[in-house]
Length: 330
Ligand SMILES: CC(C)(COP(=O)(O)OP(=O)(O)OC[C@H]1O[C@@H](n2cnc3c(N)ncnc32)[C@H](O)[C@@H]1OP(=O)(O)O)[C@@H](O)C(=O)NCCC(=O)NCCS
Image (tube, rainbow, N blue to C red):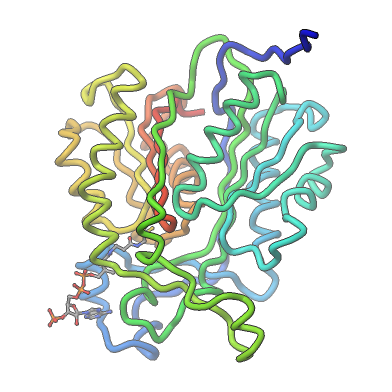
């Protein structure tokens, strides 16, 4: 028996972006009460001057809802047409139920497919690949992709190697059908043999036993080496897969892990000087899955990047996992 197959749009694109920045500004000076460091060292080694952490009335849900609502409003799409919600996160407290169904309901969606994905700092590009596939296959008309993180809650403030890196925040995009292609082929992959490069310091079972939360641990040098070697090649491949050359690119939004990593990627890709480069790490830190949509929103809001321009995005992180694609900015 031949079964009916769903038929979707030949192409998909990002229709809108939204973001939520938490209220507490944490400068480098603040962290010096916990770690032996200096504002100068942190700024020089990473580019980070300050980051945002959640305040009393904020959490991963409030941030994700704000970003998601903004993306829906900006797209001007009726919520009844949004068939799926994907939340990319590594900082939601509950392994089950997922947070995405609650976000979908609070955003006014009825009976939408909704699920969380865990792909750390590659989570936005992983989710975008899913959203694009759902729209193009006809499994969903519109997909809301939210990346929401509260990494401050799993940061070990006494760890000299990570305490200064992370911030909280959320970004969201609405992905929908398009007459021209706005999302290039994803270049993605994983290497589980490097699971020990960025890790959770203990399992939840051990956390229950000793009554303290697990935190994030990281071999910073190993991440740095991987990001400036293997990830640089993956970024180049994403350009090739989309059929464009470096001089046709308008905007570069790499995961905001370290400004020195971004500088190395720029040199490797030989991007022309006029390419606009995201540097939100300076004021937002590393927001894991949320960095790319938050940076996209910031660049469009400031006017540095414009709707319709061509951007390369690439995320990489714990797993190890990575994913990148070329997109048309909403
Ligand atoms: C974390 C990171 C900034 C550390 O920088 P680094 O140059 O690798 O630092 P190292 O661990 O090699 O230490 C270099 C020196 O700085 C010192 N140092 C380390 N942490 C310090 C701190 N917080 N403040 C001041 N000095 C510090 C070390 O003691 C060492 O001193 P020495 O040369 O006298 O021995 C860098 O490795 C990094 O950004 N990696 C990528 C991290 C990342 O992006 N992770 C997320 C991926 S999604």
